[in-house]
Length: 341
Length: 295
Image (cartoon, rainbow over all chains, first blue to last red; front, side):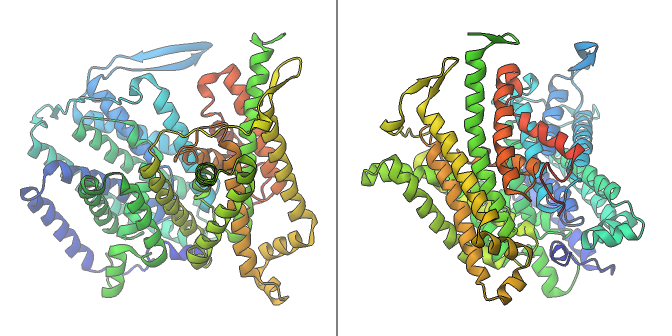
């Protein structure tokens, strides 16, 4: 397992002030930036930043490469959009014969819709995770990709997703029935708070005893087993946590953009989040955030300049990062300055 | 004419034949993936793009040089295989000492670049490629019509698969390959040029993908994304079969094609997803795959 050690950050338990400084800088930027940058762009970048942080929890700290995280992102956004717009849930259930069971719900307020989307992602994470962790390494990647593709086809066929059209005109509603989210600034503050809370939660998980066991599994799984850890349970727990935070990101994105579409469940989205994390730095705390901002701004500005060539540029960045820039921006910075970031 | 569970034999055998055709492509592609993985320890995500390149080379040969299907069947795998060798020398060989995942990420990036470039030049809609005149028409088998071209695809793919199996499992060259897979350092000590063998293996695996692409050109539309979705299904096939065995890859490929065909007859809504469902079930029962060894 020598090779595995090359993914992610070293598992040194030392603490440093560098993370605190970087966190302060990030919060400051989140406060200042809306004065200069279009808030919708910032909200998109924040959703993807959270998505990348959740993904990084798995690749950076357990060494598992999931190629199917769009599944949790997309389905959480579908459920959140559906709950906010329609509310009523109906699904077939086997009671001697297939019957449709309907839970009559009114359209929910945005916080409940996001919660519902997140719960969906957690449940899907539990199912997909318990199948996928049976294999390691590249098999794990292929299995997650295949299961995500399966759920993509479900999304194409299920009536409530409206296929190619997606769920459109999702109301943003009032947060807790009080705060009007149609106001752009209110929405931005909500997204920023959700992002920061999730970011801190992920940081706490990484630095907890549980997180230390995850790193031990990444470095040397047989040894972790011999020390008495049930590594399968740890890996499954990490997978579910990663899926859950991905769900938060997807559900929030659906409310912000008032849209849930097939793009978010399709495999290019899974590739995109890998690229964001890779560019920023696998297994770094701040890397995924920077990577997401970098990629989202690149797409925003380049799409107008070079249109369809964006996917070629993305592919090129992949090749470049894998060959010459494996530490990513933040990883390289931390390495040069000998600090943890 | 007779009926099976309320489905006419015509429809049933028709779908089974389509399943067998799809299975031929699954088998060829998963075989290439298995051969490459055995030698390079890399899952070649570019495989789908290289399959697409094979089909496009066939179209270019016809348009610019006037060379037809049979020429394309020989030239396209050589050309695309040569580009594969360049890719291996330029990019992949730097990754052998690293985690396997980097190989997957790099080939994924290459696939994005190749498919993106072709989408820019040829759009998303497909280009037609006509069947070779020798293989048009169909045979009446009594219970169904068998188009000649489809029979040829199944026969050709089966022959190529079995020939590959024979070379790897039963010849001296194959013995070197298998030995180098087990212990490259020791094989090098015996004076065998292992890096060149690795390069040629990658070229061969890529050529198989291109061959599948040429054979697919007259059946499916030739489009830039023809390989993108196929490769994900092939990944599932590879997970089901396990990559330890060449014969396993071939059997799983054809078998899953047939299962998919049957699903199209009896439960068409699930025909897109059935292979993934089979994969999940196999993983629950036998995590190493049907023919796999644990890695």
